[in-house]
Image (cartoon, rainbow, N blue to C red):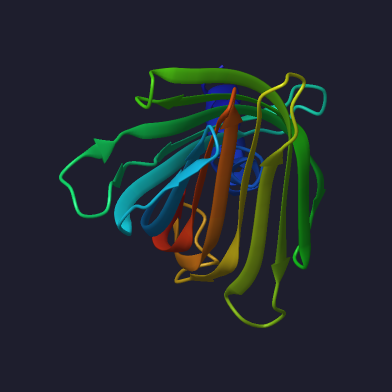
Length: 211
């Protein structure tokens, strides 16, 4: 029995690097400089550029029929030009997706998202069912990849789009315990709720970890 237990422990230790390729938690946070515009009843308001945070956490596994899961959240606050009035807005998305491709050169994810968008302008909010897609293209021989991610579409009269693209550099790509990447790019978000439209766009820089 002791030999069997020891053999099982040795096998478990040997298999840990393999399992690390199939189980993973991903998390990231971005710092954004955002240009904002609001349109309501034909009137477009002016806003100062605003710095906001956004982030995500995702869990991926090796079970083929069960989708991976991801949560994204964005602060979309903006200050009205020439005043101290602030419009507080946010967007949260819960995503279920499948990895269709995942190799050393190319990754592709497709799935569905449930998005919640809120703004304190007239206390508007909406819930949307949307499509989700994400891709990465790795540069051979370098710890660099290009990425793109889109949440778009709607099953209701309200609508929204969240699209981002950029480049990332991974400091320790061969580590089996922790990968750390810095990334930068451009992100565009808009939402239409009743007769109100909000648009947020601008550059971002952030940090990703995978463990």
